[in-house]
Length: 153
Image (tube, rainbow, N blue to C red; front, side):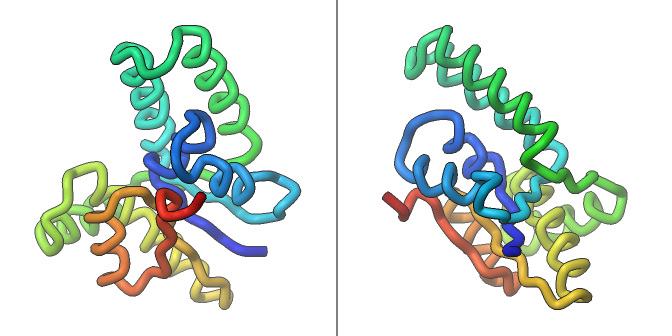
């Protein structure tokens, strides 16, 4: 079983058709037996991103309603959430300062690093999945394996 940490830019691809959607859908398919982890704040970010796309006219109201409903259902079964603890927030502050990251990006990276630390103890690597180039560069500097779904068909 492989472990993947998806930030919100990657999770959104599962519900809104764009470059990398098929790859993320295959990665997150329960039949793949991959373990998909997210930061608990990702739930808010994904719904906000879908709603913003609808308000901007990039997706219809009905498509947005369906995407949000699918995400909410999958959230209960397909994703495991990393809680945002004081330790994660403190680490995120350091990451924001060191890498010049936006606030929630620093939280995403800190959550992924917390997961990676746990998984290293049992010999299971974590792959960080994000469509954000700046965040991916920071993750690489923090020694995480990185996949960019936007680089996938």
